Image (cartoon, rainbow, N blue to C red):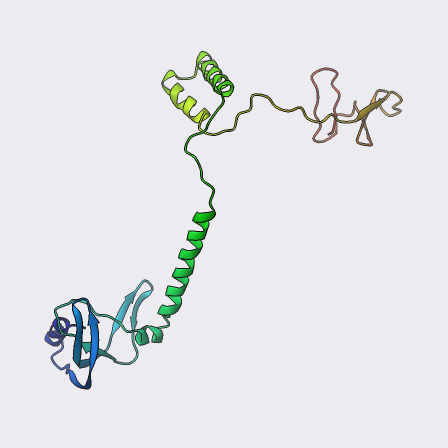
Length: 208
């Protein structure tokens, strides 16, 4: 603590007494090194997020010349409280290093998307179709901005590979056709197939 803090402490606790150090201790400050010649034993209480923590034994505090309003705890006191400063600093440095590596390996994301003329025309046609169908005119520009914000559009979609299927006209159970899908015979007239798809024409259920 500084001499200023000690004077305030002395005013509140007149019985407190400082002692002279046998050997002065050099203390590094911003203005330079100073010799500390006095110390005082105090009972310190720390205010933490979990509540106040009182040290079980008095702590010797050096009285540093000056008027600073700081009260600094040494490393030995922090260790007694279970706070390993070196370990905390090491974890902080490791976390910073990992964040730097993540930033270095992160892909660059461009704020703009380059769309071909064909895609731009198709998107514009979609926005115009939305306007014709009653989309609010004041939001058309925002709709166009959102539609062109990401490269999600394709002018043409590739065709899915055809499935191998065959029909068998001799179905004893239904009297109708049986669909052969990947080696599995399925009556096309059975509506109880879960997950089936019923086409509009013919009313047949097909489980794929």
